[in-house]
Amino acid sequence: MKMCRLLSLVLIFFNFSFSQQHSRPKNIVIMIGDGMGLTEVSASVLSMENSPYKKFSNVGLSVTCSLDKLITDSGAGGTAIATGYRTNYHFIAVDTLNRPLTTILEHAKKLKKYTGVVVTSSVTNATPATFLAHIIDRSLDNEIAEQLTNQDVDVVIGGGTQYFLPKEFGGIRTDTLNLLNKILSKGYKLYTNPDSLLNSETGTRFYGLFGSECFPPASQRKYTLAQMVKKAIKELSKNKNGFVLMVEGSQIDWTSHDNNAVEFFPEMVDFNDAINTTLEFADKDKNTLVVVTADHETGGMAIIKGDRDGKNLKFAYTTKGHTPAMVGVFANGKGANLFNGVFDNYMTGRKLFNLLDPKYKFK
Image (cartoon, rainbow, N blue to C red):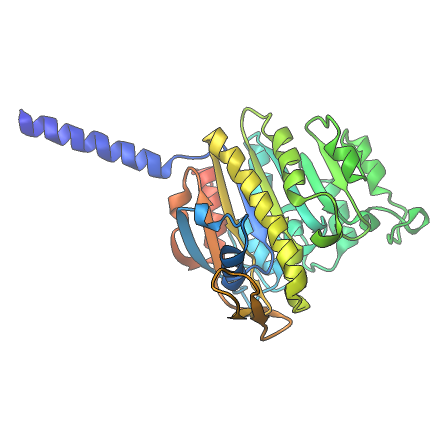
């Protein structure tokens, strides 16, 4: 009898542990620090008071190669995370035969969840495009903008108004399409001023498009990525079925392309604040998975000098391009333990899909 009771307790404990480890989150927030390698994270931890990375109890490493190249770009790198498939350099959520790959935002809509994207680049830039469009070349911003307006996404925040407007209205489109009017005709609210968005009662479907190409650098703007993320989450969390949100600290990458350590710090602080805002929501919500990663590393950054307390850090760079260095994957929330270890970048996408919908089948 005692043995039976002991066996029953063991089985109960095992089932509880299994369900805890593999329970599905209601909400998923995917946060991508574009170009943010391990040295960039190290610089944050060493020197920034707002650095969130020690708050994560589950940490993995992602191999970032594209399907056809050792060194990836944000198109192929973002596609791996957004779809769970590797693809070729510069491709946007399509396979090597130009066939669309289902994105996690598209599948979330099938599950009646809200979806959103918040970035500091143009919303047509490579990383957000991999969640919002399907095209063989990341440089086709006008086509990506048109595809985006055909998507059933609930919240879109970023730059890039020039790709939504014809030349006679200040854009660069060579056709006659005014995609901002199309957005309005579909029932979205549209904000082209950050203050108007932050001070509004938006409803659940809106675009916030600030800047012809992108947000100003973090060091030059009064509004923050964290504020935009907080606004997006406020609206997306109104859905009883949950939401999936992608957030990108886009301009971290640009500072490393320029080997500009001075501008790197404000961009990392801006992204860190957005992570902290998201973690605060998740801590209160208790049903949100937060995954922070990067599509690739940029610049081959190394810390070569500094004080013991992390002040006065000095950097060296090995390139103005990307590198194949692994990037971190930091996770908190239900299912976060799945992101421990070393794995290929497309597995980040597959783990996210499996937590969103265990019945989803990859080919």
